[in-house]
Image (cartoon, rainbow, N blue to C red; front, top):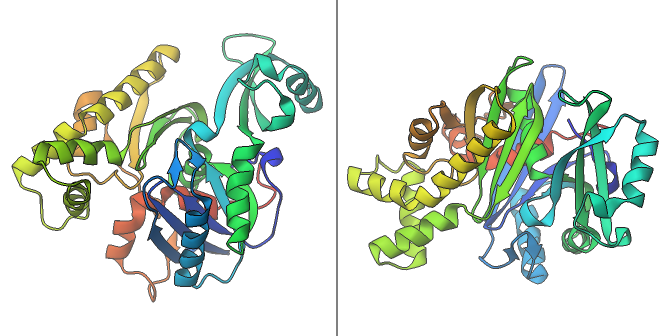
Length: 359
């Protein structure tokens, strides 16, 4: 489990807070000698436009919705782990000559403009993790570098604090998904799995080998792309198109063949971009056999999406189960509840599993 220390400070008891562009999700997971247990899940919608391209545009609205979320959830802890995604954070894998961690930090600080599109290091928070020796360049090591502008981090942290909460950790969506995967899925050292997190306005691609990230990519398409295309096809309002899409995703009866075809065709730009991302990974890492594609995010349950990706990629694609090895309080949740919230809870589960001092 990765920890990027420069992006956060620590507290003891935490809850996972997933701030998406269309909803806020809060998750509490406890741990005992028998493993992890889901104790609390709560979700509230967030109006369109509050967050755009990873930037917080309407902090007042976010603050109000956060207060509502915590009141609704009855969460007892005020310490949360949240995350950044998309354009608000940069993740790069870079090769460096072999050196110790302190020397590497000094090198990046002194020459940050070589590695990141930021001119002034004073405006940036960054951290890194040394992944190990390079497979292709002897004497070099692979390093995962993560950075975000301080003003972006401070805008989210400031809103969370104004809602009466305290930020214990600021993670990255892709790495929260990695944490979720590590806890729930068995894998061998050579296993390569693609996590596709389809949010409302952004999709994250994270390729894992032996549970660790080796490739990431974000692109600005998601569930709203499908809704807008469905809106045009059906000649209805955005709200009505969203209702039709979500109704099919929730499994309110099997969608008829015409609707299934409409949804698949409306998802074509999204499917094509996922396919391009996977093809680019294959060209960058030739010889890496992809075992599986796991779909998560609020739009992962779009009718026919997993089947369409399986056919296009010729790789088994299925919806992720973030509770595969995590039990749940049966006084609070039913099996149907767990199945329903699973895809959109994936990032939040990874955040709620974080513990101070993880590396």
